[in-house]
Image (cartoon, rainbow, N blue to C red):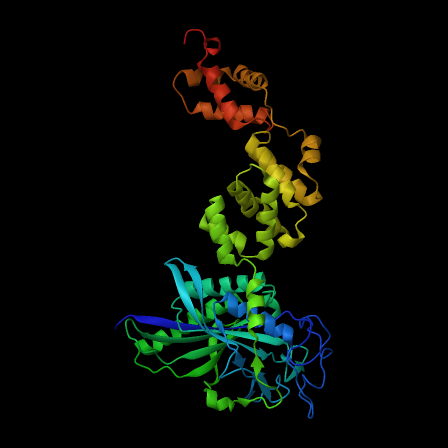
Length: 487
């Protein structure tokens, strides 16, 4: 059978970090911690006789995302009623955009193992979020705090073909949303959710296969597992000569399987019609230009700048640019670093400091080590006044106490032994204490040089630079005064 190729399109739903909801003045609250049904009113619960009003801040946030994704804003877009019944939708319909979205025709470049790929963006549109259901044994509860929260939907063309593509796209998009400060990216709280449309086709076939849609995936891990399972399931059916049914499926995290929810709806099933209580949304040219002018440096732009100016590897630049707080910390450390190579700052940050943060379950925004103090520490290593080993010890204590390097180094006597005479004294002391090993070295057992080197470093308590010790040791071993009689 001809090899099958996955064809995947993603729909990403991102809650916008506004203070109030999309069409009413209710506060946007943390739906995971706020008391249920306390941030609701007659508008977001859909009581008769109420009128919605558009949240201007949500429109601005959505426009920021659209422009960052190179989408073209529509001068005139329209809100519509998307009619369907579900308990977490109190009005019996959702106010969304369909025929005339806020923006369309964008793209996002992603980095994959196969190189850079461009993913086309079909549409970016505004809508309102639903409530949240809590299923209990034999009954369900509903919390409408989330109902009406501004929700941005970003829909790709079916340009994704692998799990690597999906992960790269979702990761880059999340980083952009956080950089734009329109979404926290905290998927554990459901503020960013994915829906994947998946079909298979024979390689080279321009026609798409029958697709299924996986709903409400709220983590990268769930998304990747669900898509992998669905690709395998569809492959099995097609290989066996069985058809794939167009349907909407859910994902069971416990069993690691998708399950059928309903037949896949088409647009006419939702009976879209223009929201009669809202006029068309008109974007002034001045607003678009003003939002465009205030866009921050995006993650891809930051990576390019760092690689060009500082010579960072793609891997280092990628890790540091993934989160706005990480990028800001790195920039602050660079500003205080003076002549310290940026690449060294980056490696200490990604390797040693991130290790401490991960071990403590802490985000970099709460890091007790100031960027200038990290730069100071790395500068001492580069200048040779602190060994790498002792610098790691100092960094650990800085993380615990929040102190700068100076008091810790002084308290533990960790300054490097810089006097060449003092280093030579340490070497002579070790050679005098181990005459048998020196004799074996003279007899041709060259590997003992490394053992003697370790003894000197141990005697120095980690305060001697390895290069200085190695040079002094070789000079001592080759000098006539250290030769054993008769050798």
